[in-house]
Amino acid sequence: MEVEVRAGYIETRDGIKAKRGDTITIPAESAKQSPSIRQALKSGNLRAAKVTADLPATGSTEATDGTNVRQLE
Amino acid sequence: MVGSAYTTKDLSASNNPLTTPETIEAAIKLQYHKNLIGRNLLGYQKIETSTTSTIEEGDTQGDIDWLSENGSLPKMDFTFVKGTKRVRPYGGYFEVTEEQQMDQLVDEIRVMVNNVAYSMAYFEDLVIFNDIISATGINSIDAKKPWDVATGSTAGDPAFDVGKAKRAIKVATKYTQRADTILMSSLTIQYMTAFDYIKSRLYNTQGADGYIVTGVVPTFQGLVVVEDDAIDPNDEGRALVFKQKDIGIWQERFGITTKSIPGELLGKDMIAFKSTAKAKGEPNIKFPKLGCIIEGLYTST
Image (tube, rainbow over all chains, first blue to last red):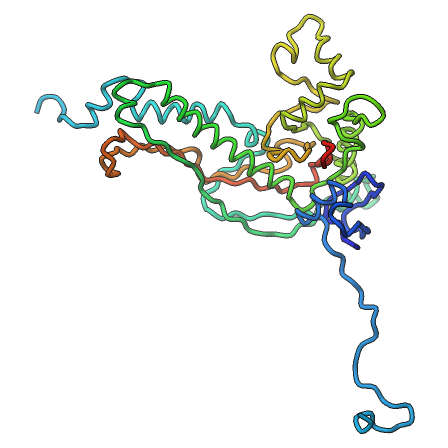
């Protein structure tokens, strides 16, 4: 999972080195996280990164032949 | 009227000067001040209200530069977000029985005094260190390998890890600040004494009384070593490297205050008096960038 670093600096056993404001990827499973990651998540020094929507906006669709979709249902 | 009026309080207090409420209150304060650790590592501010403002430090801005042609110097500053915090009272009490007072059981009373005084100091340490390790912005690193293994290929490397923590503080503060203290639990210190190079330093003291004799831990990589179990009460394997006094302040509404209430006022016939101790203060960790937690010191974590 992607998290935003709010700690001044964080360095983990598995090679992550990040500063405040960076976005890093960490294991979602607690057992696979390093101790400093677990503590930082607990204290709010790592926060879930804001996810950019990658799905197209949902809305009404229009049939390509120009017929009213509502009438087809 | 000649002399003072006879009261039950005078009678109960006359048994032994060491069991009078006043003496016990003084003893609580004396023992409490002897055991302060966390508070002495922070700055101090006396406050007049029960709510204080906090800041969450942002990035340091600006750099030192040469004086420009127009005679100006660059501005150095840091951003911050303001917050508020409530300062809460805390404390405890114990009761001295009439029997303890009349039979002059000073030893029993002394243990109760120490329990309250030590517990007050330890409670403050727990609050202070918990605030530091959970402060937003505190630096954090993992130990390369756990410190509870001192030999072989899986042995820990305290010197490397402490060096890394010191560097983390430098990086986070743009190389402007340096740590001066490391805080460890007694269990961590025990594990560290198993490393050959540390053991050698502890034993070889050129004739002076060292750790083996006094129990006083010498400095480690230029850092003052402070032993306090409140940094890791659950033995999770954690140490803290930080710059004392600057990392935050202890804000105190009022310091330790004691009060003795006679048992008869409490409706308790057999109680001579109840001694309470309370204080009101909270840590305010304003500059967590000046600290670095070392996590993962024990194999189980």
